[in-house]
Image (cartoon, helix red, strand yellow):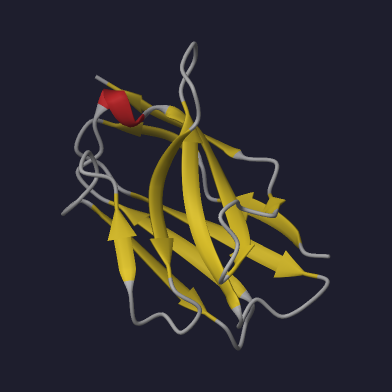
Length: 119
C-alpha cells in the first residue's frame, strides 16, 4: 500500500506560481508511475501530468503544457508539480496518484490540495 499526501496548494494571483508536493509512504515509489490530476467545481477529474518511474519521461495535458513541470525524487519518495503562469481556469483540487507500470488505472490516490487562482 502507498499513502500519498499532497501539500503546497493555496491562493495565488493570475500569473503567479505554486509548487505542489506529494509525499509517499508505505513503500517506495521508485517502480511506480506518478501522476497529478485535478478536479474543478462541477467538473470531472482530469489528467494534468505524469512521470515515469525513472523520471525520464513526462506527459502533460495540453492545457498545462509549457507552464507546469512534474518531477520526482525517488530517494525522498516525493513527487512535485511546479506550476507557473497560473490562470483562473487552473483553479481546482489537485490530486497526486500512483500506478504500477503495467496498470491501466491509478491504484493509489491522495486526498488532494486546493489551488485557487484569482483574476
